[in-house]
Image 1 (tube, helix red, strand yellow):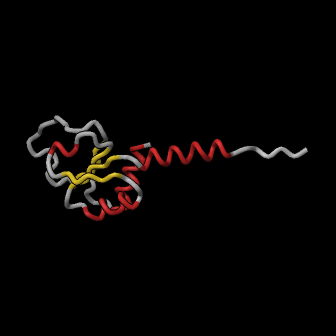
Image 2 (cartoon, helix red, strand yellow):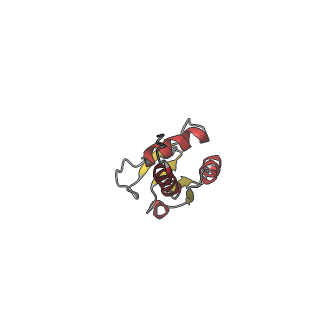
Image 3 (cartoon, one colour):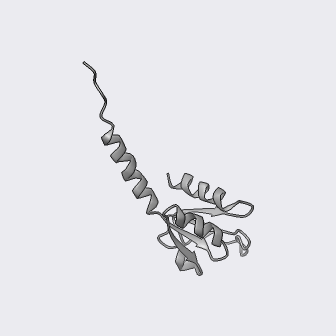
Length: 102
């Protein structure tokens, strides 16, 4: 007798995790258009960060780092991770986003 394992439950769980993962809301600074495009292609909900309130309810935010902490203040507008895209390609930023969402 040959027993074949039923992987359908595992496949359903993987698919469910993928669907939940793809629904992440990512805030991205306006000037990072390539990053926005790559994240949208991967299925993320991308929000342009034009003002501080845009970061609210984001799972993760991507910033240029150019005006990083100019005033020396440490209050934040988001509970999600903040990724500094300075020196990174759009694909590298996307990898950082996905690793922080796991």
